[in-house]
Image (tube, rainbow, N blue to C red; front, side, top):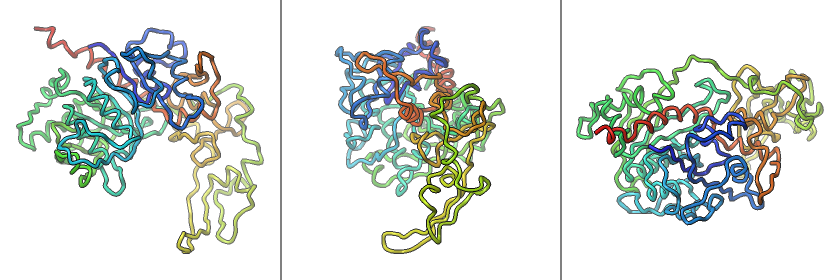
Length: 468
């Protein structure tokens, strides 16, 4: 099967880099094994410059739709999905939003979702183009949202895939659990059409039939989740007893699902023929571990990344907490990293006048060389508790991460986001935007691992027809 890809919510090309083993800027010059026939990246918050799209175009060029138009930087909700070139793999990292629907439709086909909720653009693309395979990424809390009806949103996604004739596997993966340089937990979804050779081969390997008893199906789906499935083949897990698998049938009506469905999805699962099978698994990995120290600069670092001494500490560096229940510290002291990352006790008053004490614990002031980086957010580099601060390897001084280090934390080539192509001109991307792009990105190394499994699936797809 041709390795053709459509990349939605493309960012700066994380899926593309992973699938094509792009580890350095030199690798960008090599022929790509996976051909991206179309992509889309549009940032509604950017009024003047579409930095992510323009960086993507600088590295990879653009793609026209079937009408000969460049719609790669148009709001995906406004794109006519029928004009997207045909492809065999749909990929994308999409945000966790409110997927509820107001509908009495029996299924999700043709359903018009809420404006601005980007899942519906994925669903519309699947409905229009019917790709054999789909690989998606989202935050780990997707499985539990919304808080008042846990599991509803993920249930709606699975019901949409069911109604389009797909089986869907999912796994919550922490990149550091498989040796990579960041502690970042994300939900990955791999869906495949039920009429693919791959679907038939999995069913055959695990001895599954729709008409089987629920207990026999439990055993078959356990084999998928623990040994034979897409994620089990790519990211091994420890064995779990079949009786730990929870089973639930999705309601047929999408309106009923939206109104009443709630379910405790675990970190591993599959939806097959409208039935959910899910269990909690633990990663099985004993290989090398990449750490923050491994990806840090060893030479000279630009002075702009270093933190002035007066912004580091306001008192003895060994002090890790402050008590402001009797009065706030001076503003200058609260503007230090020691205060920000330290534990706190603060007197607060709620909107109804109730007085209470807010407290939070201290976190590590300096990030350790010998551990993977913490989860990087879009606020990386700002004055925030979640920002990494490190001791420079050459000078010993304390600083923020460089833009290139944030790229390496996500597994991108060094300086991948340094330049954009804006109106035909090469423009340097501001450092804060480069960090923002990386906070929004996925860990490319994981996609590269999944690409190896996809290679085998695609190489075998269609062979059954040619063998006769």
